Length: 452
Picture 1 (cartoon, rainbow, N blue to C red):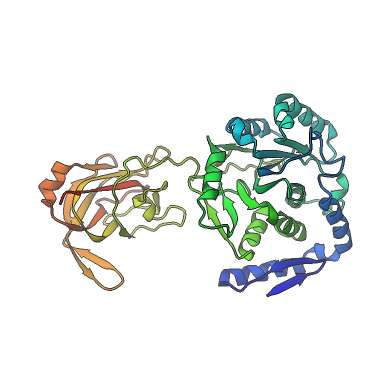
Picture 2: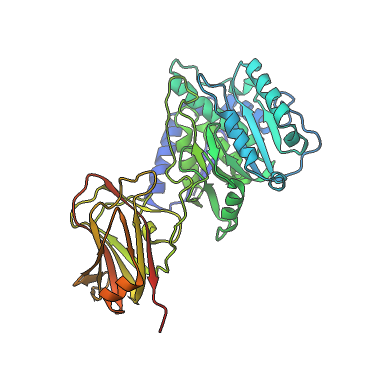
């Protein structure tokens, strides 16, 4: 069903789930209660301005050398002069230096100097970028832009500094995205206080190419805020319209999620993520924002076992970010319980078919949370189970070995002395003593005896 909102804005609303229905209600409710629908004429005037973004002399601060070729990926980077520490220089240096000359042929960095009434700071930033990155300008890999002050004419006049800051962010993103809509095939939204991982661009494009199809709305390369979010450039006008519609009633972090869900297409978060939040001081004066992305640069699995197909069960409470299956999966990630491990808590692996194991290695804790290891536990095995139709219930467990210092390593000699080359249906980790710390299981590597 198509619902037309006042002023020509349209949202395609499909009844797909209870969550979608709730979001539809929230969005329509907020639209009905926002000032936006009462200022459609001024909005249309602003839309005319934003539709001409990139053509105005007052917009592009560093002129293009030649006619601009369409690139593959745009990185949109809005920045303002912060009240305290400034992170932009470190961020942008990392973005540039961690790409190759060949990669930069298909990249354009669009730096949006979004401060109002601060021409001295903007000119200083422009001159600094031109002095240090003139080679990017000459190869059409860098644009520095500003928005005409008239674009912000309807910005809510309020004494609430937080509301003003949040609303202006929506205006900023709307302008930047519309400016960038024809520059490339893909668009990645950035913030000015992050650092990229090494080889971030090849990782991004590898993730794009590994998608099963093109039916995605947003690929996420950070779990935080509006950092590292990739869209098809063809979607930018729709997302920009959402920012303008709900400019004062919703923060940007909510609006892009509404847009993603209502698109009817999928979103996906890459793990490990590729951008880490660097800033401590927000662009809003006196606001502290010491956020960190737990998925940034997670180390790959060290042991890479055979890990035959299995089902995972645990009595430990788990989260969607660090689910139990990530301990056993060969992909990057780990299991992290919600709450402390208690005596007789278990983590059970049920093989789809009985296996003859040769070795088992289990690592708990990690370098950032070394105390969240298994402080007193053991590994047990079972060759007996009952099939209830939904679950395989193992019983008659026998002990294989104890954990030492959060680690367990069972070599082939130890395995043969206990299991006697018998087929095993299940293995489980059992907590032998309650601990105050939560439990991380970083890796479970099960090696199979392939000899017939």
